[in-house]
Length: 120
Length: 112
Image (tube, rainbow over all chains, first blue to last red; front, top):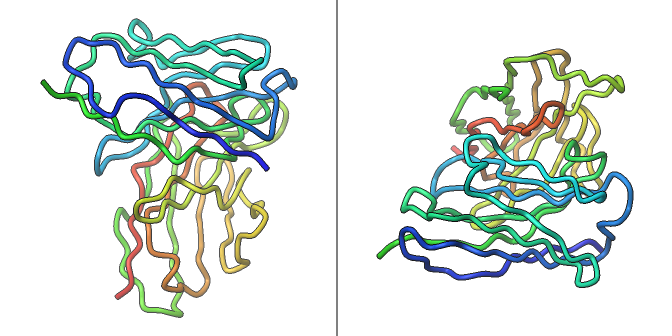
């Protein structure tokens, strides 16, 4: 079955770089149309798309955060990595990775999420 | 970005009664392939979102048939025909037609 799991630090300091890893199973990111997306949710707030990486290694970013985000994949390890630079307390959120088919259009499975707190 | 607007933002429902959530988009959600990538997610307290409905009206596997979706163009609706206690949570519509995908603000459903 399809599973995704986020991992990374629970606490980062302002201005530091956050690195999150999404480890998945049950599908291959080399399958045409497959995509992994990063989404975050600040406490008590709605969901926000961050970035996506496609099966063919195309990468797309939310324009408002584009200068701070990098997404990459390691298909041999079934992992997708998100880095976000210059972290700010406003970036405190639960970060999710999710799978989508048909490109980014059909998110179906989500990881359990990882809460990242930005504080000195 | 496409703006998704849900209403109401909060809903208090008696067990066994219906609930309806509306979602409107700032742009039409029909993609060039003819499909409309409007989906509904349920987020129970402390859990990650779970997809209930995909492409407007298709129920995901294991989703009770009391959940149904409808709509077209820019206006969509999720209906819970008879609310049960396990339906408590926040419901989000999401569009996947235009990049980046965007979510509605969420509708919190509680039991009266």
